Structures are given as structure tokens and as C-alpha cells.
Image (cartoon, rainbow, N blue to C red; front, side, top):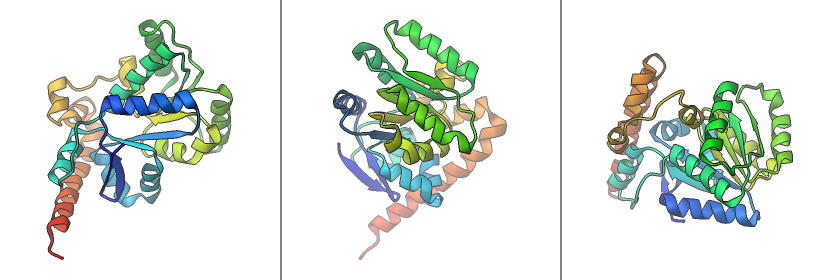
Length: 249
């Protein structure tokens, strides 16, 4: 899997099918723990200031590009990037793989009612799906070791964390070796999307890099300031990296 170094981060430029194949091989052999993270503009910006988040990203085995603006930015900086691998799409594809191949997923995150609704929908889509375990995403820091123990005891093949950043990245980085799950992935708000609590942007907005604008439309009070700040900082970061790259030695 080809690796890009940009913004002080390790990023892979694999497509969806290559990513799924690598994950399937890891689960099939159970020879190692495969940590997966997706990056978008906001996460890249936050990683510049948050050393723990930056370390968690760089410690991951697969770092996919989730946001279309990151694809464009990396191409602008001279990197060959075939496509983005949206975390929500990859998550749902992998649940389908679990059902097809008898792998058992563990779902960790979101509110209890959202979690239950999502699992109900997945069981309707994939009648053969066997779920290793589940837990909502509301807990205190001192509960983390017990949660990691319970996940380990479930003997799940894949772990999906529907928890916000950077909390999920830090949990994965801290407990992945302890849990010994072959594949671990943070999926953010994907549980809410599958359950129908929130909606994804229309395809034309996704391909136009405007998915963030749709999120602002859905949650203006919470999202407008976040995206105004991080989008501006991301543009400045890209320009800074372009200037640094083209600067004479």
C-alpha cells in the first residue's frame, strides 16, 4: 500500500477495493492488529496542534483519505491520489464482508437507542450477520480498561468505534494491542447515519467537496464555527506546504 508523507502525517493513497482486500487478509490470518484511521481537513488541522492525535494517526497501519478536499490538496501538492475512501462507505462495506465471510464485528459508540437501531438495520440487510458484542459510547475515563477487556473477551474480528475525534483515535492507539482484535476502525458519526438519525450529503455535494456544508446545514449551531475555523486553517496549511516545497534550496 503506497504511503504519502504530508502535513507531518502518514497517509495512504489506496482505493476502496485495495483497502478492503488488505483488511480481509488481516482478519483472515489474525496474525496482527490492523489499526485504521481516516483523515479529513479538520483532523489534519487538529493533528498539527495535538501531538497525541498526530501520534495515533502515524501509529495506524492504514490511513485513508476521507474528505474530498484532502484529495484535491494532496494532488495540488504533487501527490498521486486515485480517490477518497469515505469512512462511512468503508464501514458499511466491511459489515457486508463480515456477513459474507462469517466475521464477527463489535460495535462501540453512539447512544444506546442509535446503536440498537443500527444493529437492527444491519441484521435486516445481512440476515447472516453475527455480532460479537456492542456498547454505547457514553463512559468515563476510568471505565476504559474494563471496556477494552470486554472487547478482547468477545473475540471479535472487527471493531468499529462510533465515537468523536480525537477520543476514538486515542482509545484505539492506547488499547489496540491489549484488545487483540485483527481490525480496528474509528467511524465517527457513521452509526448515526446508518440508524437514520443524521443524513449524508447528496452525492453531488460529496463529490464537490461540500459535505462539510451539508453538516453545517444540519447542525448550524455546533458546526459553523468549527468548519469556518478548520477549513480556513487547512487552506493556509496547504499553501504553506506548497510554498515550502517550491522554495529554492
